[in-house]
Image 1 (cartoon, rainbow, N blue to C red):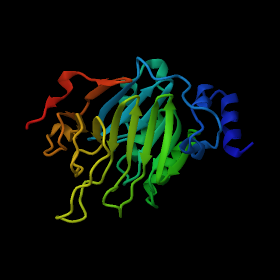
Image 2 (cartoon, rainbow, N blue to C red):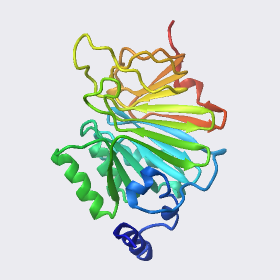
Image 3 (cartoon, rainbow, N blue to C red):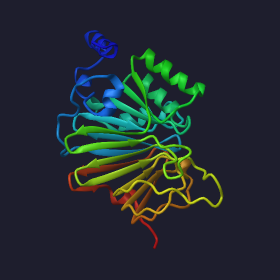
Length: 286
């Protein structure tokens, strides 16, 4: 038995891990890298009640994926208080334990929020998406995670996570020296629908550089309000608006929505469609 498995079993016996936490750490390359367990993830199939919630956490967006029996959070923001509050408001009281938190590592933008959620005591595992480098801010995250018995692994390159039968999350750590993949991204494939999430740096390498093209999806979510995004034609584009200010420029999309401080947008998922409130977005000008 490897050390990671032994530690999780010891925590389970001590009552610090719910039994289902073992069940969602599973067989894909990503999950095997996280904890070294050969157990299945997300036995519950996709269906009614599944949703994606986008919220403003300190001026940048974070995303909650509530699918089947699994709860995954992407982002963090620069406030320790905003992310735990956002997760609590976006989930039912009995579904607030985060199975996996994905923290993009383009810089340290999301560390404070991640630390706040760890201290909330509701995170089983953390995946740092990209190379965090040697910035001491990441050492704080690791220290808090160790204190709260939360597994932390660094993921680079491209990985695939099966959340539930019919729902997959494709992760890409990006590379600062690759203009086509300047930062971390994730694409949720849910039945026939696709939701793309990017956390790309806010500056181009040069004034004449072409903005990179984000992954294709029916919905595009930018965690940063002012990331330069190239040609893309999602049906819906969402991003956080810092401190209620408007942000100019966006990919070509039929509908767009700025998520202000304290606001949320909920995407209700079906195998063949995505539903959201008409008041959350407005038709883009031609």
